[in-house]
Structure formats: structure tokens, C-alpha cells
Length: 333
Image (cartoon, rainbow, N blue to C red; front, side, top):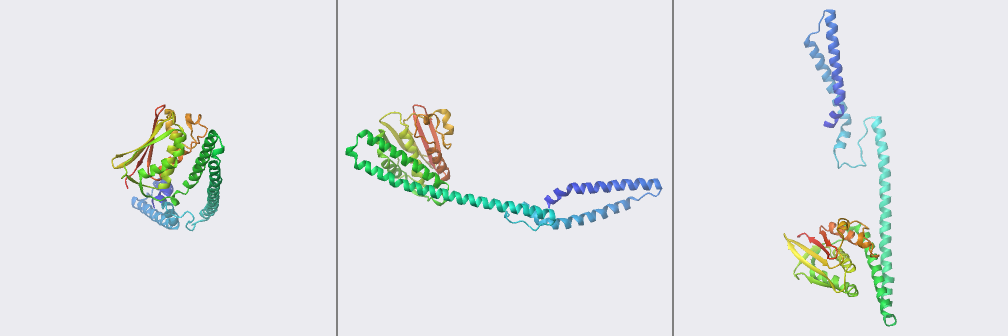
């Protein structure tokens, strides 16, 4: 009703301005003719016109009531509109429904194309893992016949390919995260040890050594697969940007205000201050990325997206030539 009155307040004011004008003219005319109109008659005229005005607007509001009720309910189904009360509204409804139908068709088409693209990407990545495994097995089989430097170079290139495939796979899965996650109780120390074991060749190759200070009884609630990927991206960066041989990557935990905080600290080259605000942006490689060709700028971006979705906070502190510490905070369950 408020919306209706707001729409017609101008008409109502104009109507009464005309009534006032008519009364003034009538009083002047009656005064000239010597037969003045009494105030009671003028009041009667005003009441009668007001009564018919109210009747008119009540009938008109009932005619448009469904339209006004539709506009004030945000949860109304967009595909439904009440029956138009007049020809103009009917034309607007037809125009709206045509646009809405086209919009739904375009959105559905985009969803289908996106699903097909994601499915193709995931299938392609899994297919690429097979030749990658074959190449690694062949390399191990021919180890005795290959120069040590050649084997090491090939292993590094295979690791880069594997890392790139993992990034692409999790990027495609992230778009359907709600279908692909399972929160469970995780022993944090066991998860970190499995991460170190899986990446031990990478640690050895770069002469970087892990140090773990995590309570064996410490448990968190998260999705193990997604969290493992996050930790792997952080660890991979820490190894990649190690400033010297025999440096350490330190895994430690702290409990603050009933929240568990995992710190992953390295002794690497650090991140320039001007880059810290943008390290979670997609494809941002920063100053360090100009010196390391394998930098993609996607690892920390995906880590941030995953942590946000899992309701874990992630923070980075770094100083050039001093190292970097990444903190992941887990909410109590």
C-alpha cells in the first residue's frame, strides 16, 4: 500500500489543488453575483469529492495489488509475474519474460560449456599422469646408463610437469568444491610427515631439510586432501626459493585463544615488501618470479582460495634475505 500511495501522491495533490482552485473561483463568482456559497456547502463538496477519490483509488489498488505485492517480496520467483491489469503492463510482462527466457538459456548454455571444459581438463590431466609415470620409471630403469646431471635435470623437469598438472587439476576442482570435500579429524603431525615423505627427493635435491615441532596429540578438523595440497604448495615454494644449501624449513604449531596455528618458516630469499599485499592474487609472480622461470603465481592464490573455503585463515610474513613464514589458523570445531 505504501508503494501505491508513493506512486500516486502527486496525482492526489494535483487533484486537491484543482479542488481548491474550483472553490476559490466559486467563492469569487458567488461574491460578484451577490449569492455567496456557505462554508458548509463548500465542506460538503470537499467531502463528496474526497469520498469518490478514495473509492477510485481503492478499486485501482485492488486492480494492481498483486503487482505491488510481487515487487516487495525479494524471494518471488523471477519467472512468475501476476496477471497484468492493463495493456501496457501486459506488454512489459511479455518483454520481461522473453528477456528472462533468453537469459536462462544463455546461463544454462554457459554452465554446460563450463562443465564440459572442467571434465575435459580433469580427464586430460589424468591422462597426462600416465606418460609422466612411465617417463619417471624409464628414468629410474636407465639410471646406470645416464650421467648424474642428466638424471637430476630430468627429475626436476618431471617434477615441474607434475606440479603444473596438480595446479591445473585443483584449479578445475575448486569450481565444484562443495561436491569434493569432506571434513574429518586429522592428526596434524602425521599429515606434515606424509608431506615431507612424499617430497623427500625435492628436499634432498635442493639440500633443504625439514624440522618438525608439532605435538603428536594435536588434531584439527579439515579436508585432508585439500589441506595437503595447500601445505604442498607452501612447502614447494619454500624449497624453490631457498637462499642457500643446508637451510631448513621449520614446521611448528602454537595454540592461541583455543585456535591452532601452523607456522611454516623457511630461510629463503624472502618476499619484497611491495609484493606482500599481492602474493595471493592470481598469476602474480612479483620480483622473485622474474628470477625463477617456473613461477606461475597460482600456488598461493589457490592456497588462499582453499583456506577461505575451508574457513582457515592464512597469513604471510616475510623479510628479504631473512625468510618467509606462512601461518595457517584453524578454527576450533
